[in-house]
Image (cartoon, rainbow, N blue to C red; front, side, top):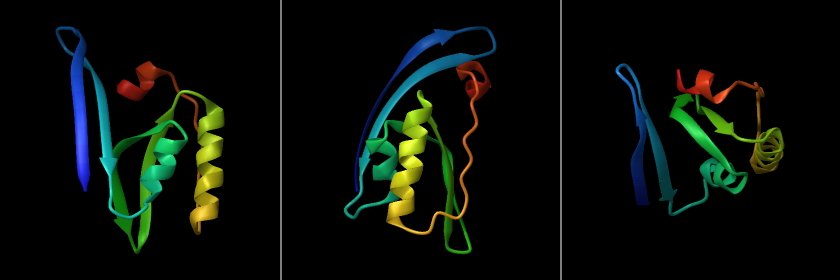
Length: 94
């Protein structure tokens, strides 16, 4: 797997740091992560494997990107559950 990345400090306060992260990973074989990238979404946290099922969270700027991702995942395999929640970027960082 090929990985690249870069980061920069956006703002630092006494109790928080805001960092801009840009990363890219290209697995040798297609994965759901390619659908995430294709729909201009980004993963939040780590993937969880439970009883052969992938579980992960993603974020995106526009709801249409999340809806596109869901449609792509349905075409790729058995999508058992999905949920779209709208939160502010402040809530996402906290």
